[in-house]
Length: 150
Image 1 (cartoon, rainbow, N blue to C red):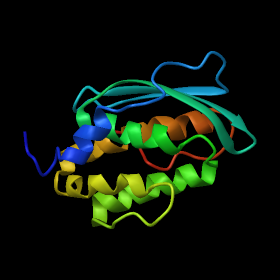
Image 2: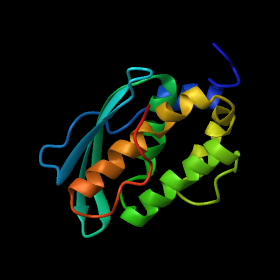
Image 3: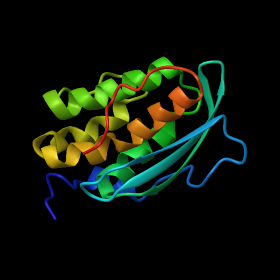
Image 4: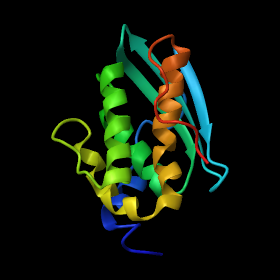
């Protein structure tokens, strides 16, 4: 195991996932799969206008995907669709440019800076945002920004 990739913070996040399971009556659900690593995540959301009011997920993913899902689960309730899009863009900037996240709800993505050096893991990291954005689109709000996994 490469300690640069699977640092202590990522391992801690992967082991402390909240909001596991499914919602009884979601406004929308979506799944995303990674053919490369076999990861899969299914996300349920409820919304009030453009604000996420509840969230749950089922995942079968590597530590990277689990850790990103953990960060999302910790902050998602109360965020707007625009803030979700901002989070996806922040993670892409972390992975593509090694740009640290700004202060705010997505500061928890900072442990993923070393993942930038492992392009083959970028899809795993983006998978939870892909499913979340798909659920938002299914709810009739927003457009998917992250792109499909490979």
